[in-house]
Image 1: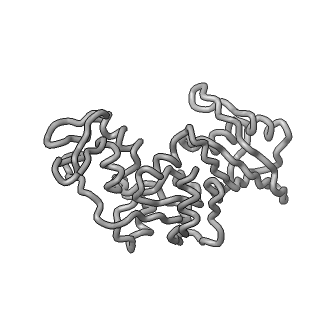
Image 2: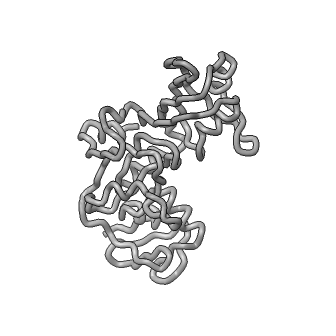
Image 3: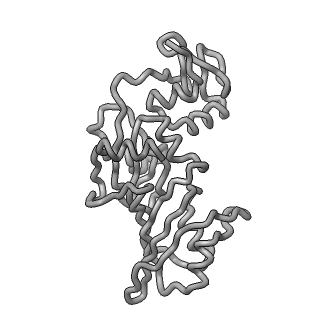
Length: 239
């Protein structure tokens, strides 16, 4: 069998995305045949012995799995949590293959997550250069003025001087003392929507991701998941 870069091997085994594997390698948590790995390292599946934190990484036997999950509020987007918090994987106990979430939604947010064991797809969907749009329904306290909409769409300063990339922002509905916004971003900074709204003086009451690219959460309810259709998988692979 042909050799693979170790980060691709780890992703193909369904452990995590290729980018996450590169981070593990940089943290010196990966070894090949007992020797610390680096980003240029290659392995031959079935011959070389790869470990992460001293635990063996085994080749995935089954096929590739592609799921859409509606993450409820109160769950963290991790495979496991050292603090004992509820994880999104708790809702996927019936899935026999090792899978992992692509990207993140913070604990207080809800909505669409892609879950897979396809490392190449995970890398494609999260890599900044591909500018995959993620659309959110955001309920904020009070009214929203035109200056705030313009600022959110043009880019605001968060995280010690980082300016967010242009976003698509619109007012969907105004009801009583609340405003519902539709916000599409093309990058994935940690808690980005929350930090953007905070930067322009808006208080978020509820945050739901409804779409990734053209893929919509549809009629799924919180805690439910389904396998993606073939046309949906092909769409994601062509992004």
